[in-house]
Length: 368
Image 1: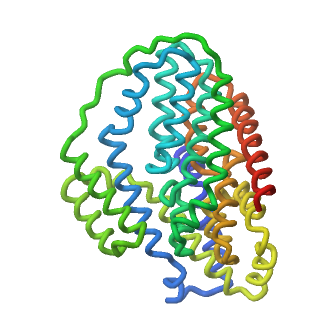
Image 2: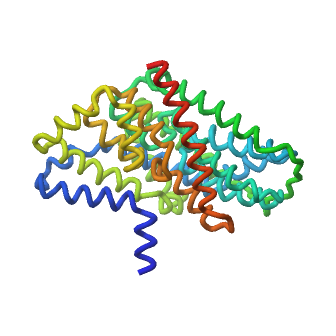
Image 3: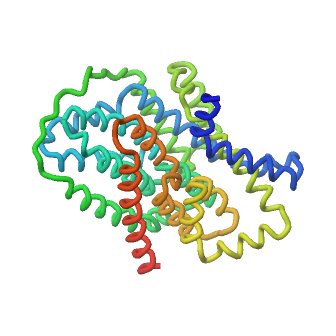
């Protein structure tokens, strides 16, 4: 029973998406048309990028880079700033969930070594917000961006022009909060046994990352990318392909089925189209608070052609509740294992997110 409850908690979004897909099947009977619902290009790109990032993470690249950056830190403020900036900028390339899986446990270790465990709640809250907000600046930073960029066949200039103002404002706000973390001096010790990167695997994943980017920007056919990635990993590092988050891929499949069926139900299509049209940002934010922003992006994309507004809505929608962005739950899982008050973390996390969301909404209102 405990194992079942653990699975339910860990894969709640996937299970909810499965339930929605099954319910929709009672209204639209399963048929070959279901295959037309599924965006195979997005699934292939997501799989290849997750596989590459899993490989980078497994060989210890991110941890070694972080340790190198932290070696000369002398103050609490500097430590919090560097950890937060690591999450903000690296999430643009390696996705928000991979960043938090990599750096939150590392942060816990570093703060304990520095005797600054009291800064854990603030630092992890900032890191989580930074990963969610930094990742919104690139098409490969998070699953919803990759999906929208692919589904709408967006131009890279349109993508950046839509999201850049909010990323810049968010970074400024995060920097201000981090600067308030204190000037106390610290002396960091070593982080444990140094890792040595397998140079052959490093070259393999750098090449595969480059090939993946060719697929994202439509220079290379996604089917060729998928074949190259799978064969390469099976031949040289099969452990990485085993560790890929397949539940996320299944979540996408179930949501494609649910949304495809929803669009074929009389009246539902018209109603959703009427409430989403010209309200993409607000609806995107509100929907994300309940379903999280990845399902919200897939759902709402069927009912609007305003890609830029929806992009803004679901990315800002990652701010707010713990479930607004599923990546935020990764941080919370690590926090739950520590001897600190979970209510204090939720309070700090929520306050920071509300401040960021409110100021970003104000910016949207000014420039819309």
